Amino acid sequence: MTGPAPLHRWLAHRRPTAARFPYAAVVDAYQHHGKHFIPDEWTRLLAAARERMPEVRGVQRRYLAAFLSTVLDKVDGRYDYRTYLALNLLPLPDIGDTPTPTPAARLLARRDRTHAHLLTDLIRFELAAATGTTPLPQLRPEPQRAAKRVRHALRAAMPALHRLSLVDPAVGGDLEAVARQVVAAVDADLTAEERLAMKVSMLPVSTIHDEWMFIRVLQTFEVTFALLAVDLQAVVAAVHAGHLHLAATRMSTAATLLRDSAPLWSVMATLQPAAFHGFRPYTDGASAIQSRNYKLVESLCRTPAAGRRDSPAYLSVPDVRTLITHGQTSVDDALDALTPPHTTGADSPALASAMAEFTAVLRQWRQTHYGLAVRMLGADQPGTGYTHGTPYLAHARAEPVFRHRPNT
Image (cartoon, rainbow, N blue to C red; front, side, top):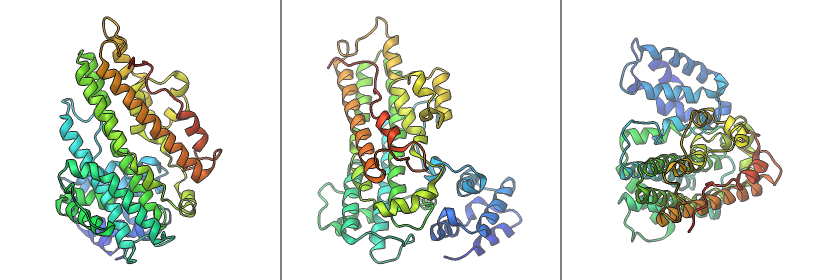
């Protein structure tokens, strides 16, 4: 770790530029200490940098402002799930990005790139940890657990890597050789912006090894759910237009994408209980119940009933709740609005089948999440950040995905 000298030098400039901000030095400090334990000297300097933002020049100015907001979240009392995962520093699609819809293939390619980058970074970290050259040195897993983690991460990354043509489907060899080939292929393809995003989006609260994996897996899930929300919004638009075949295609694509992410649970299952309980106390205030993207997916399938809309599930994501109360249209709503009313299954067997497929995959996702949480916490314990935890997940897994019952 270089210390705060680079930050002092940046602050000393009469007109500092965003492009010259010492991101690497700041991130190295946060990884060396853990965000919860970062020395006051660093946060004072970063607060000074934020105060100077009106003077900062350069096209990266907005990104620097987002970074400073993220690293100062605990100091400001704004720490939550989104700042813990540095989601505003990752290129996630959003349902309100542009008035003109982005082509589905382009959106999928963007998601695949971020998905592959996050998992490759995890693989790189595990390979480097075997030689003791990484930050987060506490409670490093035994070699067998680390190898299992790499194997499952590779499995989770492969569909995206193949779609991007970054890895030959026939790639083979022993686990470490394949992992190194994948890391080299992805590294060679990274843009400067993507490299920066991977660097600045790893801000663990502790120095416990497994937190790196924990963050990367949760970020990867968020990338997928962000795209699923866009896909479901496209399904709504297609149903409104009467293009039920197009709606079926987009719904089926969403189901496939969610199914492809299932191996991420196997990666998460390599989390050491002692490691989880070691860093968990410092995540107080951040919980997956605050996942905006997951709630968008749920609410775009079926508008939640008043009881759920007014529960902690949606009170934790006020912007999504506002969308709902202001009339956000779900897939169910769009089907209801068709004239004459459609029964889905009778009028579009393809859409009914795709809805049933998506329902099955999402229910399995919920069940796996619940099972892993029970294994780590027990059946009656609060979750990460001391929120509603496993009792909440037990109830949420039973929530219907769609109100419409597709006649498949």
